[in-house]
Image (tube, rainbow, N blue to C red):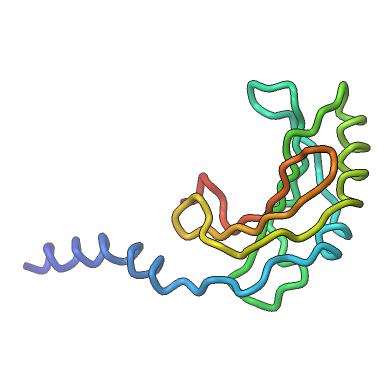
Length: 130
């Protein structure tokens, strides 16, 4: 009987922890995103690049809101050009909507608009941690 209770507790712990997680009430501000350094990576299996700012609280005072900002679909011939293009795009950054439930368990998403046709969003959590 002890083993059954322990097994149930171990199974239900992640479910109850997820259910009790506090949703963020605000998204990172445009100014906070623009003032943070990022790095550029090549998209897997694609010619495009993406910019990423990882694990930032930005200007949030909420303890549960560690965000990662993504700027994706950057067209460039080189890493240096992608970095330059990302900086130009960040100058056009505007908040769109959020926070809303993200695509992964326990994640939240904020959407932004930028010029140049890039995709821009901030998300809590990491897909590989969920």
